[in-house]
Each structure stands twice: as structure tokens, then as C-alpha cells.
Amino acid sequence: MKDPIPKETISRLFTYFRSLLCFSKLGKKNVSSYEISKLCNINPSIIRKDFSYFGDFGTKGVGYDVDNLIDEIRGILKLTPASKVALVGVGNIGKALLAYPNFESEGFKIFMAFDNDKKKIGKKVYGITVEDMENLEKRIKEEKIKIGILAVPESMAYEIAKRMTAAGVKAILSFAPCQLVMTENIEITCIDLSTELSKLAYYSYKNLE
Amino acid sequence: MKDPIPKETISRLFTYFRSLLCFSKLGKKNVSSYEISKLCNINPSIIRKDFSYFGDFGTKGVGYDVDNLIDEIRGILKLTPASKVALVGVGNIGKALLAYPNFESEGFKIFMAFDNDKKKIGKKVYGITVEDMENLEKRIKEEKIKIGILAVPESMAYEIAKRMTAAGVKAILSFAPCQLVMTENIEITCIDLSTELSKLAYYSYKNLE
DNA sequence: ATGTGTGAAGAGCTTCACAGCC
DNA sequence: GGCTGTGAAGCTCTTCACACAT
Image (tube, rainbow over all chains, first blue to last red; front, side, top):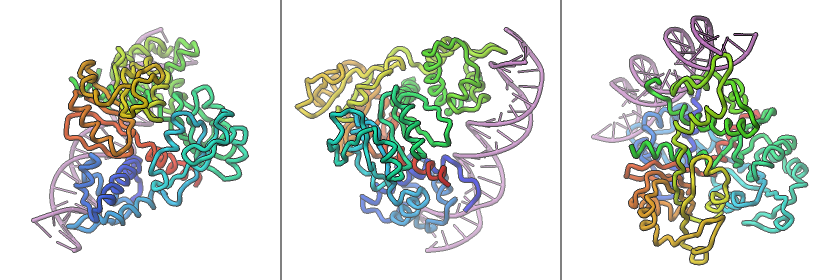
């Protein structure tokens, strides 16, 4: 229980969490920092230190109890109870998200989905009924939704981000290929797929040299 | 031209690049590190130092020439000429990628797409003809493709990654929600959408406190 | 014997502050 | 006056190495 927790630690906890779910699925009861290391590609000392910021989760000479560790991390990362999320844009990316497995086990639920295409409104997509974007503010307020996902074209991203923020959303994950500059106190993560690809390519060239 | 370039610097160059394209599109000829800072949310000193690793791109008292800086970064990041990329899996995520704008301006071209669904094979999707996954190795070798994108279910990800690697692929971007542990010398980036959402949620909760 | 937890040392990155040039 | 480029200082994170528990 030390003072300043590196932000990389938080980021890595998500990685550990995912690998622990794997171990658990495989029926493993106990893991060492070395085993987690192999799966996550992270140095064992870092793993032990990361955990030690939050408590003594392991047993010396033995390792960590998988299920117990999962619960501890779930607590640290506030992955429970499931947060309600609003999705805007039921195009390819939107559908991909609705079809994604595991959201609930990671503390998530896409609770509502909006689109402005009249042909989609009212239809069910992977179990969720698409709603009219006109009702965005009303519905977000009704359900007190704090997290939004933007899967709309670049040209609409900013306006919808503004509308969501005004309705009380505190965090947005955007797939629009642009920087969203917001004045409000809101957390924005942009995943620009072409940038991700570019990064990957850069490292692959280095691999070829 | 200094010795050790922080890896964060490389990562930020992609962010600068994207914002410079914005400035250029808006007709701006010159920018200062402060203007880039505002758009990217990165401290101006860092921006200047990042550029200085690669040369003196700016003019004191004036700033940086937008188009020149774009060219410099393009060179550093090897964003030209366009790399040929192979996509495997033409489901929702695959289609989203095929429909994505800007890939070419960032040095990319999805050059071929594979699926194992007989109904999709031979059909054109956003301008690309879907090919039979059986021909994966043959086609990748023919076109000497070095970069692959995996947009397939978790259960198939590992096997296809192995096949691509064996055929000569050096870098893989995977959207499967799992860690891909590969023994070969290959660069793998996994984008697990549920983990991204979880991270976002974590920071949003902090925002609410 | 094995694997955790942790202070201390070391590496790497960011911030500061200012000289230098337009 | 304005803004870049950069050594030096400061800070944060990682690695090391070992005491300690089982």
C-alpha cells in the first residue's frame, strides 16, 4: 500500500486480468509471477511490484491464487458492477462491438444503441433495439449513463460528443479518425485504427532490418 | 540526431502527424509547438524535444512549416510508400477496416482480404474481392505481404497467426480478445476492445470522484 | 527449494529555463 | 517579441538482489 501508483501499473492490471481469466478458464488454481510474465510479456519483478501497491496477494514460495487475484483486480479496477454504456452509430464498428463477447465479464454492458438511419431504428441488432438519435439526450439522462462509445463518421463525431457530454456522459471512447478537442472535463480515448496500423507497420519494418 | 530515441517519442509522432494533417486541411501553413500542444494535449517542450531527435525542423521565433513537417514525419515513420496489408476475416470489424478512410494517406493499403465463408468468397466488399482462406499462404507469398490484420474469432486467431507467420508476415494487428503468444520473431499488437473500454471506464470513474 | 515482497540502484523520460535566432 | 532547440535538473518507472515465508 504505497503512495504513487504508476499509471502504467493500472494499464498493466488490465493485461494481467485478461491473462488470469485465461488461466482460470484452463482450470489453473495457482500462478507465479513467472507464468503471468510468459503470457503477458512483462517482467516478473514488475508484476510483483504492481500487485504489491495494492496489498500482499501472494504466498511466498507458492504464488498467487488465480481466482482470488481476479477478484482483487476486479475490485481495484472497479470492474464490478457492470457499467451501462451507450453506443452511437450502428455501422460496421458499432455492430462489431455489439457482437463482441466478454463485455459483461469485464464489467460492461452496451445498454442502448443509437443511429440516425430510419431503416435501422427499431430493429434489433445482436439483442439491442436501435433507438432514434433524436432521443439521445433524453435517454442518456433517464438511464444516467456515464460512458459513451462513438462509432460514427468523423464529420459527426464532434457534435455527438458535445451532445453526450451535455447529457452527463463523463467518458467517451471514439473510433472516429480525428482528435476530439473538448473543453469540458471529460475523459476521451480515441482509437484511430489507421494510426494503430501505422504504428504496427513501423515496428514491423524495424523487425525486418 | 541524438542517441536513444524514447519509444514514447515514436508513438507521439503518429499523434502529431494526424494533427498536422488536420492543420494542413484547414489551410494552415505554419504552426508552433503551442498550437500542436493544444490539439494533441501534449506539453510543448516534449513536442520540440521529440522533433529535435531527428533534426532542426523549425524556425526560431516562427514555428514549423506544416507541409514540410508532415513530410519529415512521413519519412521518419516510413509512412511512404504504401505498405500492402492482408486482412483475414471479413466480418463486422473486417468490413469496418475496409470501409475506413485515410488508410492510403497514412501509407497503407488493404491489398487482399480472406474469409472462410463460401458465401463471401468472390464477392466484392468496399472494392476488395474476398478470397478463399485456403489460398492464404500462397497469396501472401506471391505478393510478399509483411503485415496482416486478424479480425477473426478468438478460437481461430492463433492458428491463422501461425499460418501468416509461416508465410512470411512480420507484423500482425489482432482484434481477437486474447493474448497471442508466438515464439517466432514477429511483432504483434492486440487491440482488445473490451479492455479498451474497461480502461476508459476506470478513468471515467476517477473523473467522477 | 521456490517464489513473494521490497528497499536501493539504475535507467529513461519529462520539465525547466534560457541562449540563440527570426 | 516570439518561438525553437537543448543541456541540466527533476521525476517516475524499472530492474536488481536478497530477506523472508512456506
